[in-house]
Image 1 (spheres, rainbow, N blue to C red):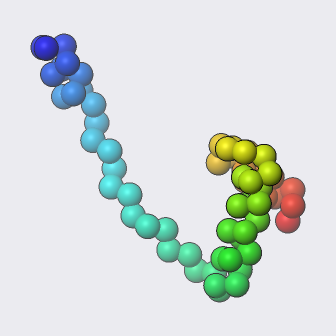
Image 2 (spheres, one colour):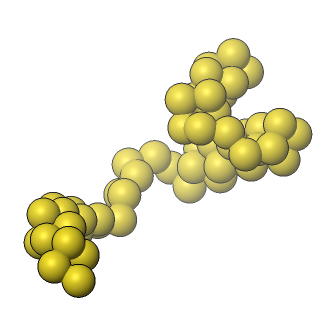
Image 3 (spheres, helix red, strand yellow):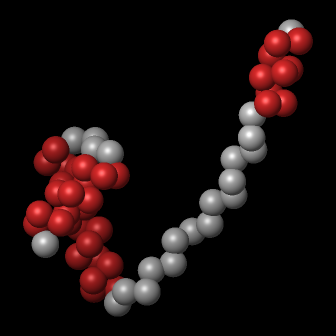
Length: 59
């Protein structure tokens, strides 16, 4: 029990996440989200880096 308490106290708290505000027109935002959705649909779950590489290849 002491070990569990020490482990909990040693962990850093998670940072508060804020929503991302995009400064793109709605049409461009929709295009970007559609391309990302198609990539994930075709290739399955990918890491963020892998998804970004595939988006750059298509663009």
